[in-house]
Image (tube, rainbow, N blue to C red; front, side):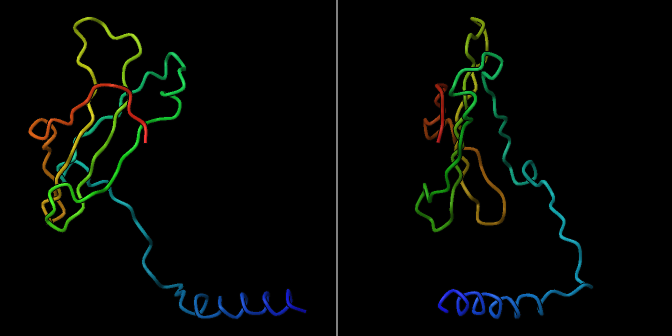
Length: 120
């Protein structure tokens, strides 16, 4: 009896959602605004050597780094497995939120451009 009541509850709770769906609503469209927002990050990985850190990928975190009430973005990069001696190594990046939909790269000033394997 309890299961029947729960199923009925769930079905009834869906009614407002189903009624709110309008067949005339606009199509949802996603637009890549990464570069116009000031985020110029390229993930680099050592996937060609199939090492576990490269297969897992990197990561990102949102945090108010500068304590101004907006969330800033920190992105960790992977690394090259066997880089050439003159290779430019991929770095982690910190982007401060300008509060207007744009970000400023402050990686170098903050000293957080680590070139080791990053995951998280």
